[in-house]
Image (cartoon, rainbow, N blue to C red; front, top):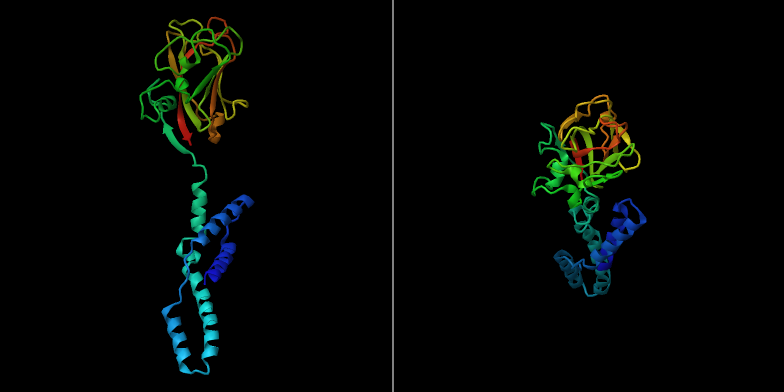
Length: 291
């Protein structure tokens, strides 16, 4: 009975085997072989044993023929009934169970959270969410903790982490054209932005940002223009002044594209006709996707 059971099981396995790579098929067969080794032996049913005993006691002349024919009958009945008791219909070796096991090994799909702006640096943005580990921990500068990475074309004053600081602080690049600051949210995050906030990086109004682009990227190499600012004199013209801009209709984000990297690129001179990029605050809102 064990051999018949194994043969029937392998025949069914061939019919229900999932499509996949050769490696997947090989692994499925290895698991199936290990399961077959632990299948119990099938004992004769009471009905078959009683029928064999009655047939043997019916006549002495036909006892030899009945004894030779009974095992074949019992084995045939056991082979025909045993696969049904261990068939894929009972859920143990079904296609659905194999598919479920395969799905458990797949990467978790991304989940999204919406962030809406209410006021400048309102502790309701995506950077604050990351810095507090989904609001489960006290705030820690995400650049210092390694959850987010800030890079700059150059640094003359401060450190890159100051761009994500809760408190206003001094931060600016060297006096070099096309200076920039980039925020990397990490490989497991992407954002469809709706608006963003900046803070001037000086305790006085000089060298304020006037002309720049906000750009987004998935790989940090190819950049998409999200919003272009031209001659915005006075918007960040004050001691650690802040302002928020929407990224709405008429922008490339109409196609609901998400980005991992965001960059502030200064495209012309600042309010003092110099090239210092002076910023010490960044926050962004929209839909955040996390794995």
